[in-house]
Length: 256
Image 1: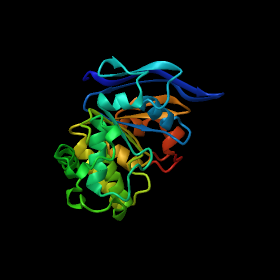
Image 2: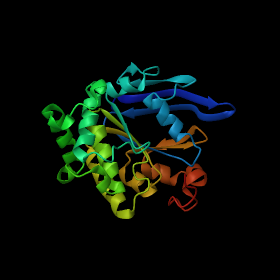
Image 3: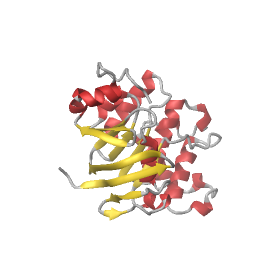
Image 4: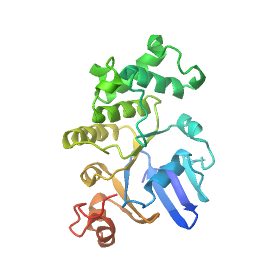
C-alpha cells in the first residue's frame, strides 16, 4: 500500500460523559478516496473537526505527509495542503461566482488582511480561480451572481474554492446534503474525476454515492471505527449491516 498521506492514531475526544471519538486509528494513503459512514451521533463531525484543527483531541495524533499536525491551527493546515469543504455554506451570495473563488485564492495566498482588495482586477487571483471553476464545470457561470445558482451549484463553487489553494487532500463533509438525484449524480461524476488527482476523505450519508466512489470505507459507530475495508467487504459485513446499513444492506436502515 502507498505511504499514508493522512495518519490518524488513537484519536479520542470526550464532551463530559459523551465519547465523541473513541481511539480512532486510520491510515489514508496518497490517492485514495476514503469514505466514513455511520449513524447520527457517530462522531463523524467531531472527527472532521479534529482533522481540520477546529477541535484539539484529548489523546492521539494526526500526521499529514509524515508531519505531526495535531496541534496545528486550521489556517496552517490549509497552507500545508489540507482543504475542507461543505461543513456550512460559506459563499458570499451577493458576489459573482468568480469573485468568491478569487477570494479563496487570495485567502490561501496569505492576503487575508487585504480581503476586500479588488480581486477581480488581479490576474494572479483570477487565473487560478478560472482554472478551479473549469475543473468543477462552472466556467460558463463565472460572472453570474452566486445567489442565482442552485444549491448543487453552490456546492460546486465551494469545491472550486477548496481546489483554488492547490491542496494535496480534500476533506469533504456531506457534499451531497440537500441535493436532488440529478445534482447528486453530477457531484458523483465530478468527485470521480477529482479522485484521479486528489486524496479525498469523504463523509457522506448517500450510500449509493459512497459505494460508487470509495476505494475503502470506514464505519464509525459511537465514536469507534467498527470496520474498515473495501466497499464489497463493508456491504457484506454482518456487524455493519446491523449497526448501520439495515438488514438488506442497501442503506435503507438508520440514516444520520
